[in-house]
Length: 573
Image (tube, rainbow, N blue to C red; front, side, top):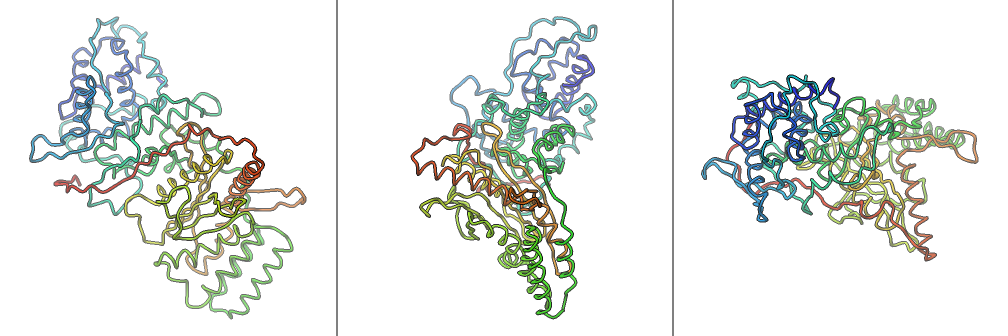
């Protein structure tokens, strides 16, 4: 908690307490803040209990991002806390509470088990140890100082108490970070979160911390779990307002990306964001586009309305040159051009508005030659189900067959959405991430050692690639490898090598001094496929099989956004 002095830290806390004391609705949390403000110069050592400091640390750490949201939701949010306090001394914990002040306006809201734990437990105050204004030796509790998300907070970004007029405006504001993923289908309905298994959000905070920053000074695991916990709190009233980053965290999936606005690391500060992404090796061994592949694609892009046979002859010459050079990027580029060009030369591009047409005319030629070139892989297109989870039907799956030919080990999943089409409830990003987690769990349960699963996401004319592994118990890392634009017409075919090269890495063949460029998706999938083969061999030889990571790390609880059956009488717009 990088304060210049402990006194500055105390003043920052007092500022936060002043803000709580100005909240409109009555609650025990507000009363607690007002009691403190009656004598704001008393020593804060009277609050040294974990319950108090957990609440305070959460408020301080999230004040700049969630203050308006909490004010907007303060009636429902505080009523939930009141019920938690009232039930903390009994075993009969209520699972529902009313949102309104009378029976006509009230609405039943479910409180998941993860939220039915007391956030604030009153205690008797002891006499002040000393006056904080007269001494710089204010003893802030180490719990607050070591709070993983509190390190980004200073006294400058904590909001001061505002006027009643300003508060009235703030009631209708939701911070943009809660809605940074747009879901048009959610506008007119009310939603709930549904858990396949009752979550234990608080117990996550006590799990072993296996993932630290490279300098061993920042606990990444704990910061992620604290983020999940705060996401569970702000989802009580309006789950549909959650961003995909927050929604994924409720599924124990944590998204990391070099793009600041699309990574959970943005909540940890810029320096930590860059250090974490650097440690993930996202950019390692990404080659530049080869001049030859770019030349092939550019020549074809200028072939609009030319003779069909002459274009095919030119591409055939490209394939001959590429296979002679054995540069894989050139080979895959020329093969993709051969499959795509005949469809675009005359009459313009195929209609992209139909999803099946878009997938098979635009996307399939880019993927087929890559994965079909590897004998370990088999491909399933739409309408199949995941072996790991029958409820999921990905648009594209790459799998490895077992020794008997019947077993399937899925290593790559794909979700494709045609332009101008939107997901109805959960985004395709969330859907793909859940599929990848199921695939990962299945591989570990079937004794594939330390697997890495891959994902391809196409949303309109943008393609993104991901990989997933685990960093600790309940800690699924979804790492975005990159994204690029997809061509819309023949004139944009020059982007084909860029599409391929954006997801590649360098690989030096042991028997060749030249560089051989392979798609990164293929490389990751190949590594996992070889692990599958090693497991199959060991199994056939009756060797003892292990689980790595251990099965205790895996999590099967799924958080899903569902539409409520009861009709909501009012909506805040």
